[in-house]
Length: 359
Image 1 (cartoon, rainbow, N blue to C red):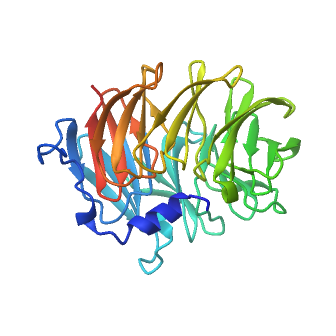
Image 2 (tube, rainbow, N blue to C red):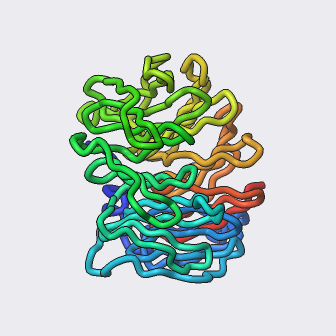
Image 3 (cartoon, rainbow, N blue to C red):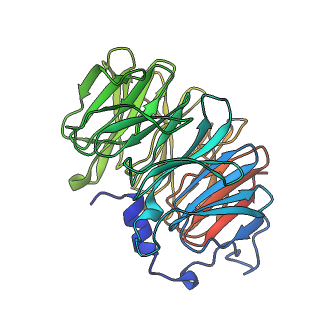
């Protein structure tokens, strides 16, 4: 079985709020001391993004805007509430070509851009995706029926590529190169300017997940759902040649490796957070949660702690250097990558939106 954010959210969606004692200390039964605030969100949180003090929160059919103190500033209705798939849409923030920060969201009916005050900028009705999207260098990349590059300022289509490739992942992008994986096990690098192919690499029978491009290397996780296992692979970003490959647990569909310093982190559907040397792939450590599924991690500004959610109902702070657990806070079932600022970790779950003190 392949574990996806959609599968997890559909599973926990019927449990009811009583299933998770979110933010209550399991020993004292009182609110956990690390919880700065908690807000109900009228549905499971499907994605988070943070820009200039605005926390964008994607839930069933809605995009919500909070300040980091927990006050809801605005909300946008994305689609018909009868369509219960749209909570698993894509969300990212990035600069338009004019230099202003925008929130980009894709869903069942369109891809759109929203200002940090909640006002609409543009809507591309023919470009849809139920997975993550990527905003980079003034362009928004949407994987759905091929890979489409939209102008981040006005939503116009710059180019579309790989229409013949099944199951394209969300893109990993730099200023000049866009990299996508696929259900067929290939990794494709395209020119950001026009979508022409630069190289492709076949990783075999492994289903690839969302690539990460960092300092001349493409890091991509793979999964073999029938065997509930996967690998972490490093490729040369210039030509796609393999640098190293190591066994890991089965990657969560839609998740990306996270590079911090000399370490590559990977959350897995097997319930583990893996840390590997970025130059050789050798494992530094492995952290195991109490149940299956650990989210894609977020790393604090100092690079010392990685933060992950889990199906076991906790958000964990884990030392990047050693893999030692620093703390855990009950927040409810989560498959959403946390976001971090200087002081707090923001976590979305079946039980709402949480702000946790980092220290």
